[in-house]
Image 1 (cartoon, helix red, strand yellow):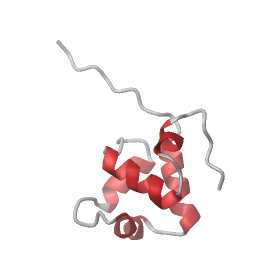
Image 2 (cartoon, helix red, strand yellow; image 1 turned 180 degrees about the horizontal axis):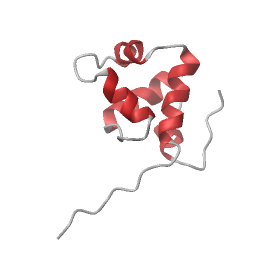
Image 3 (cartoon, helix red, strand yellow; image 1 turned 90 degrees about the horizontal axis):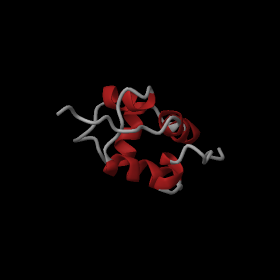
Image 4 (cartoon, helix red, strand yellow; image 1 turned 120 degrees about the vertical axis):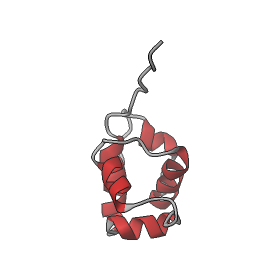
Length: 83
């Protein structure tokens, strides 16, 4: 049996980039603000923002808290972030 692919939110990458840019942070500064400097690299943030990878749940939670939005707002393609 093969692995089932995970459905990815279409707008997640843009929302993550939007949060970072609205706060005026570089990708490396974002890692520090997320408190994940021991677990994430700039290349991983780039992959999240280019929709090449889906961030782990803890990363989504920290993005949401930093952006003062609900995790649902990041995942739900029907919801737009007001920035």
